[in-house]
Amino acid sequence: SKGINGLEKVVLRDPRGSVAEVYLYGGHVTSWKNDHGEELLFVSSKAIFKPPKAIRGGIPICFPQFSNLGSLDAHGFARNRFWSIDPDPSPFPTNTSNKVAVDLILRPSEEDMKTWPHSYEYRLRVALGPGGDLTLISRIRNTNSDGKPFSFTFAYHTYFSVSDISEVRVEGLETLDYLDNLQNRKRCTEQGDAITFESEVDKIYLSTPTKIAILDHEKKRTFVIRKDGLPDAVVWNPWDKKSKAMADFGDDEYKHMLCVEAAAIEKPITLKPGEEWRGRQELSAVPSSYCSGQ
Ligand code: BG6
Image 1 (cartoon, helix red, strand yellow):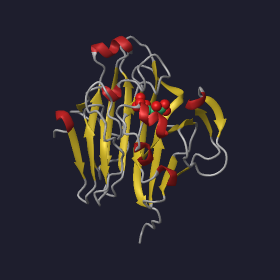
Image 2 (cartoon, protein in one colour; image 1 turned 120 degrees about the vertical axis):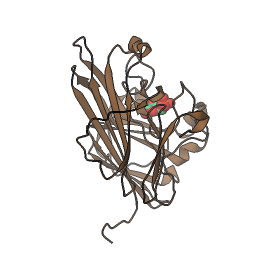
Image 3 (cartoon, protein in one colour; image 1 turned 135 degrees about the horizontal axis):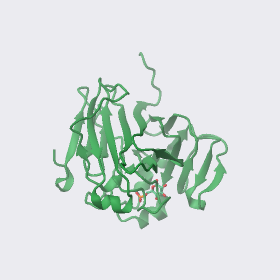
Image 4 (cartoon, helix red, strand yellow; image 1 turned 90 degrees about the vertical axis):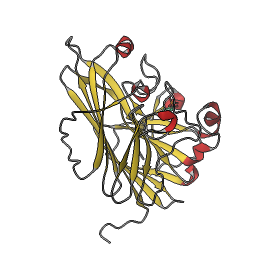
């Protein structure tokens, strides 16, 4: 169907009521609602749904470069290319048969080959499960015919919607090493307890566990991120000053969002021709005191 500015989008509806929206522009998830109709992702009220700007919020895909770690534009180009519906999604190793899903594909244009001279097939499956969980699976294959390998860094740049950033805690990253983007990527070690927020944060946590939780005290909601193939995790909140500097972000919106990004950054992924990489993230949102089986 048609989304904002006539951009094509795919709506996934689970019979139990949860809904997700995926724009072909960017292969970008822009909405994920639970069965109560509550939006779980943050999208800025000032987001610009217009190429070449990436959509501010939801789940931008950073490929083939995270941030400005190479010669490409920040966060690479996958987030501002038009993806296609994959007419022939080869079977996935992960069983998503109980989910409603869409398969997208991105291949380089001739123009893209000038800035990143590699041929690839990037297949993205977005799947919504019966419990409302949202799974993204990326499969990237090197299709270079010149025998050359390529390397890339990657992130699912997820913007979670939170009630009040000062009431939020992140669990699963305490005591880990991180690179601090606010200090020239200086390597530091996280001290103490769960992570809380009282100023700008922009950190790349290294070799993180496969499960990270975001606890929203006020909403009595916990987001759980489960990831595979993505050893690192970026935590970002721009806070007040940086918010004002972003044209597509409201001055006070930083209070209601938090990015926790499943990523592969410290050790770039290298693929030889014919090789394929997989990176999966599964998001769920549960009430804070939730006992399954009750
Ligand atoms: C984060 C980076 O992942 O994305 C930050 O760590 C960056 O440094 C932020 O500011 C937003 O990036 P952009 O390109 O979407 O404005």
